[in-house]
Length: 510
Ligand code: NDP
Image (cartoon, rainbow, N blue to C red; front, side, top):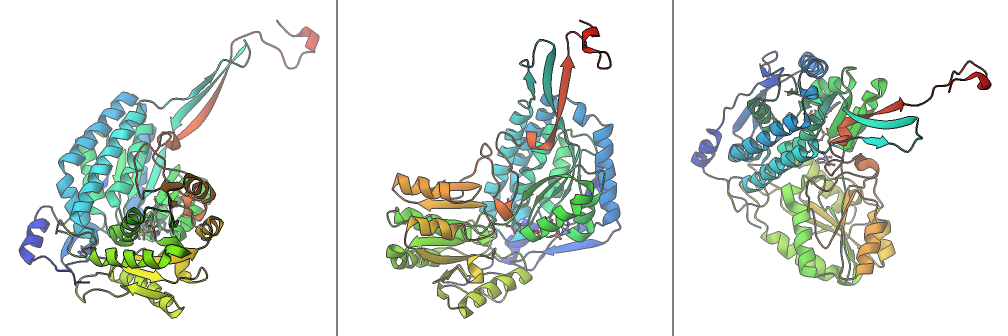
């Protein structure tokens, strides 16, 4: 495998010159610099300073929550018609498209992901805003005329209130777009905390929302570290709901923190997703999908197909083909349009990935390809296959979150299902088979929120996304994505003869 080539300084400088390095938080409809303390974000590929954002704290989070509360209790947003709210969401989609190139560069330079991939994510994000606008206008409750002639029942859907939205670093604009437009469509107001490593595109989004007419206070963005900004967002009694995406460990802690004030929760957490390859699969297609699933976004992806379960009789051939495909994956500079795998998010994270691989090797696994960082400058990890993994090894169940895929073998379809379900996670799975019974039976047997059959990582806003078990609570996207940000209010309406409860039955009025 060739070492990645870093682009020359002039190209990087021209990319950096496209946006202001210094960013402010967005609170109550204006830029807010907090205490003035900053977090600097350096590009993980080039080491260049990319952005500076305020290091917010409890006071900033509380100011943002107060603004969101005022905007909900007294502001126009929850009282506007669905058509008016949808109008703002549609305009937001348009300005996301307009600024797509800038947003893609922000995400790419802060994270290390290829700019071409980031561009696709921004287009996907705009599409989600449009879908949320459509749902805004179809949100409705229920009515019951079946309760007798003297009674009608209605179920109203009302916005849940103030929502804390907490997002991770791997897909900043895409993940906030799986939450914020639906919360806004329902009439909620929000406080958003992006990861401190990747806040620029979310801050830019706040300005776009201002441009498209979102009332002040309806969306606030506070930057900073989880314990300093995220924690108060989970405990404040003025917050009604938490929508969190991140690791299972932090999600659990956030959930525990909400218990004193009993908030509504939506949790999208980690995954260790199996790709199950049966002996009768279209091997070329399966190898391609497994390569993509393992290395897309440098494997820093909740949905990564990080566990390949392959039927024993084809395992040797399959691993050889996978290694050959892995060898051809272009790892390199995110600004090069040919790059498929960029840099790893941070030096700490790269070390953790290496430790996972070293532990697997120490436990007896083999490495047909990869296993090492690629060059000393820039944080690049070689696409890595860990073969001969035993289910008892840590790497069989831990989320590595890097370009590392473990391979295990199975004999029968029942074994495959057992192996697939042998982790605490349940986010997604794929099955590769030309046999309809195998595909359907595996799909029904695995405990996962999404099952792909002879495909991998397809997504569309129309279909819900989320996990079983330790991969989360609830679903995002799909037709109920706006309803998830509502409370149901039951109305009983009496329209017939009265009875007096305290009078004897015989004396009641007719
Ligand atoms: P983390 O769980 O470390 O962080 C997620 C967010 O929570 C960050 O904004 C973080 O802030 C914040 N946070 C940290 N501590 C607290 C706290 N005490 N209270 C409230 N918020 C807090 O995840 P990563 O950012 O490392 O992202 C990677 C993880 O996200 C992986 O496990 C991945 O599987 C998961 N993920 C799940 C997805 C899904 O849809 N199921 C999609 C994408 C990712 P900060 O980091 O700034 O300190």
